[in-house]
Amino acid sequence: MEDAYIIRGGKPLKGTIKLSGAKNVALKAVIAALLFDGVVTLKNIPRIRDIFELLHLIQTLGARAEFTDTNTVLVDSTKLKENKLDFLHASKIRASFMLFAPLLYRFKEASIPNPGGCRIGARPIDRIVNGMKDLGIKVEYNSETGYYKALMDDKPFGDYTFIKSSHTGTELMILLSVFCKDTVTIRNTALEPEIDDLISFLNEGGANIKRIGNDIVIQGVTSLSQKNPYTIVSDRNEAVTFAILGIITKGDVTVEPLSENYLKTFIDVTKKIGGGVEKTGDNSWRFYYKSPLSSLDIVTDPHPGFMTDWQPNWAVLMTQAMGKSLIHERVFENRFSYVDELIKMGAKIEYSSPVVENPESFYIFNYDKNKEHKQAITVYGPQHLHNGVLTIADLRAGATLAIAALFAEGESVINGASILERGYENFVEKITSLGGDIKKV
Picture 1 (cartoon, rainbow, N blue to C red):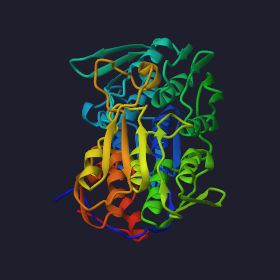
Picture 2: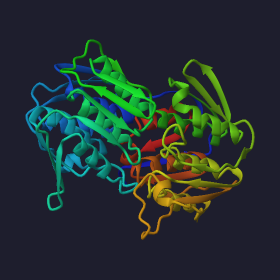
Picture 3: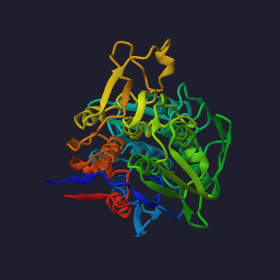
Picture 4: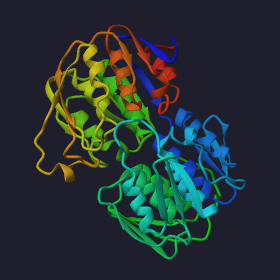
């Protein structure tokens, strides 16, 4: 047996978790650092598989990108010499597409394969490609090679409006516009606070980027350089995973540091179902079991709504709530890979078909009316969950199955541990510190 967790559940988890750096900031900040002159130092970078894949990918391009301390990464683009990404390595991570920005500014043309990452939906790239074209960048896709080729004859200029907001698309458009001609305005942008952290990093280096409501306005600058190391924010997805573990195991878990803006929606719904929440410091949050939980319907939404990354974890919690809870997924069209695995453990979950009047506009992904979409589930609770042999299909599903196994009595085997480790740093060590019984084999 390889690449698996063996978990003995049924214990209340108690203690404090120091959160790792946010995966969704770390990947983008490392790429953005390639736009800077000279050496860039980034702190609080998590030692996760996606980061190591990205650092290796950047090294294949000739640049320097490496950990110099436990959670400190140094990036230096001085010797960047390649403008075509290796297909195998680039296809492993979604963020690889953002390398178009530094490569186009350095070489005027670049080739990058279709982005990778978890298969939680088609994650269409068309919105991003359309944005690049509206800024004056020529982009072509070769279906035979699987590569996008882009040409940038002049500095980007103009405006672009996302038909539907895109997190990665917003970030790439920002990076492409840092050295723009005059001004670029990006409209209907994603509102996630991780994007604002990326903007802060760029602005500290000399960029001129302002968010005005749903719009982002970029005044072009000639160069970026770092004066002081930049520390990225903590990971709110990790925070939610450990918060739910504290509640569902009838334990008591504090997560820190993270400002309320990143967790407010989750805190609000946790209070609604009767979960214990307490602010114990400026950026410290205690989650604990207080009383029997009530069911609650949720619909995933971009920030400030209920995050799509939270809903798999939330589903496990709802198996222990009184009544039935509807979980309606708006953001991705394949986010329920964990359902069959939870059913194996005794969960009662059924697919539901909520009535949606205008699905093409309601769903964030590109809705295909000719395709069957399973976008909602009903979770019944409370249900007795037992141990099982489970398989992880994607990152957030992995954390979900780990939560279920840590809650259920008996020994469970979870295959595909490396998928979970794409986004969770020192997962085994952190669970063990809370009194959980887990080992990797």
